[in-house]
Image (tube, rainbow, N blue to C red; front, side, top):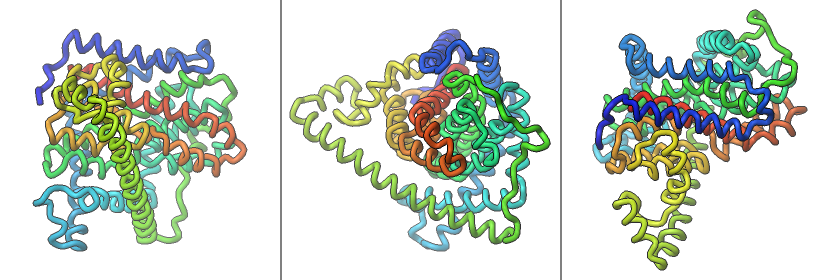
Length: 441
């Protein structure tokens, strides 16, 4: 793998081209181009740019995120103590990392901790703090929007709308669209530990490296979601807003106590782990089946496999789903600044994440990274940001179901915006990756 050469005029121009490309796509799909608030767009882009510069080039800020990353890594490592107790010698990593044993159990521990921190009121205070900052930065978003967007940095797209559940039925189309996009564009804290385990493997330094970038991606997604959502669906209706004093996160029922919260989070995490494991089993099996048709039948009998191996210098084994997705998205990957040698690989990851989910894509990314298929480290970092979100087809149903329960009278509107919200959420992640790639060079 070749190290990036650092910031340069070329990387700046490629990055600017990428940002313009993403904004052009958002402008193209806008419902009301004349009402786009360009001041809001520029404010969001400026925040993301300054944030990346602080993370990468200001030691104090970078150290804070590394420290937070180390906390996540400690929790991931502590999880293995519980796994070792349950599985004994089968929990050893001496024969390699087993995803079911070494990564998925982290979901349970993180879910339990999130539930406990919510019971103590810690998450509510942090979310309200982020919401306050977002509302000061973006004067045109409502307090309820700020709460949900801030909550999505830490909790899932099904849980964050609960932070402003009393205001959801009163939200107009633009507000609801931002709620949906912010859910698609971010990840939950409960799954971040699993991503760290997937990407970092057994290397503590790499675990901290990816933890830092995953945390950064999650924070960057908040203003990015506001920018893209308000371009797709500008605010044209009156806002039924709440003030700073009234628009606060509601506490859960505290009657059960801390142990009850911990137990409830554990059960939720167990369900989440089983759900993720089942989805991965089915999705990866389906990809293997489709690849058999494309590679084992079509590619084999037409000679396409040999052609694909030739044009990719052996990086692709044949005419596969990954190669098709990567080829389709390669032009976009070039426009946003991905190194030329890694266009197909990064494009394939983004395609898998959108059609399947980010777990499948991160697993594929780790496999390719271990096999040395990425030429540039920049491609790995950009992929980390580009895949960091729930924008996939399966999430549309989850989001419609969750919001439909909280605001049943808005369900037809919510369902009608599903695919647009997914596309907008994917663009948010691409925008974050573009800005990071521009600075990395």
